[in-house]
Length: 267
Image 1 (cartoon, one colour):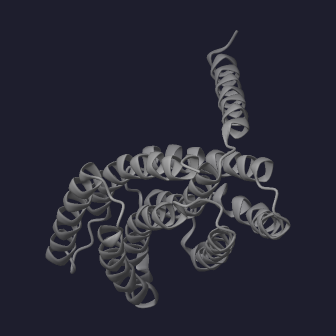
Image 2 (cartoon, rainbow, N blue to C red):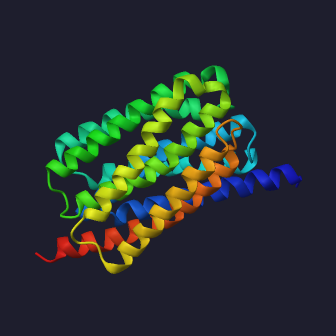
């Protein structure tokens, strides 16, 4: 048996295993808080894919970026399964169908080799599915799917904005500064504003407050790094800072999910 055959069989087994794990996870999403949390993560994945597509195109840790992009594509598919299996509301299901239609076209772009000439089209398509995900979360908030919807959405928004900041910074480095710089600056301001909203939530625990304070410090360090290198783009350095922020955000999101679940089960 050739080495190529062994590698191919191993990759097939790995992907199958991931799919089975994802399907098992899909069956476990049942509570309102879990559904909102999944929808928030689904929206963030649009920016994870964009970021890694751009980093790969720039040649910044390309192998790692390609692996992360493939993982995010797989995760997006699994999240769709999770949400379609768990949601029963007709309006939300219709919105999920719109997302699915957009995803069919978008994933074709993401599975191709990164190309600067296609970046503008991909970005537009990515913004469209991002906006559709926002509408889905708004529907969930209106339906009062969970008492913790606001905290889960705000923390999800924080993770999204972190990933978006790195993606837009990379796009500026990839010869798109004129078109993207305004959106980049708006994203940074939105990150700061979103943190203020998170810190103002009345039900934050002491652990969450400490985490948010650390996140504020991380954001300030990121701002200084970006300012110091504004004339010579350093997308790899910026993304490393973003990764640290996302790691902290993942911990906070888990705490918010636990808190939201507790609120929902109190009745």
